[in-house]
Length: 311
Image 1 (cartoon, rainbow, N blue to C red):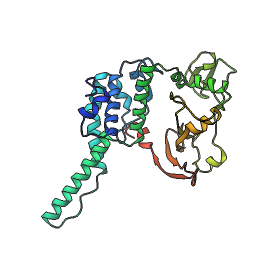
Image 2 (image 1 turned 60 degrees about the horizontal axis):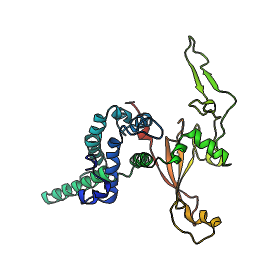
Image 3 (image 1 turned 120 degrees about the horizontal axis):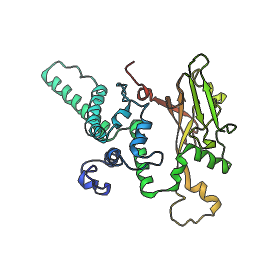
């Protein structure tokens, strides 16, 4: 439906029987193909952005970087139509409970029936309503790219880290400081010769592509909770705002922000020992309720998504 150009508004009837989350995920997967050559706010095209940002992400258990499936539109289409369903089925088999014990034909039939029911439920969940962070991330990326393409909203310019830092600095918002003392830095390996081990970086401050900053370390209270050698581990907050809606407010402007902006979720990304960034982390949900504000709940790991190669 979606690959043929069908609109999302018509999906309820065209894909009858599917829940709203399932239709949204189907729409998001189709966008991976539909947006292929569409200009992206970070790159020349959506395809280029996928190739750049999926180089260090692999299908769990395979070690295969997902950027390999972005080499062409045909390969990407095959992955969406065949690869994802196949992998979802494999994941369902992996997670399905073992066949229950039986001592008769009747109990065997019941055990098989229960096994198949669990398998089908897991397959449906992985294929149509995935809850893993990667699927939600890619859905968000696709919807953001579509919104940016349709609206040409200037706010997407702040997705450029350099533009964001400058804008925040101008507004007096605390930021990670950058080094603007040089237009270019040279990094040399202490023992390599013959021109090897030398890297140059042009500063964004002078029109280059790299933001040159000193390393930031974890605050002592957080460092005490982390293993030795953990990277900077951040708290990621998601907020919602109704300030941009064209509605009338009955409250004074000074109170609008407090009433119309709220934090809806908070996650602490506890970086793993030896990781470069906290993208490789154990992610802990942080309680935002008034009675338990700041309490760290059980976490989940994304390590398997960042394990490349067969080793």
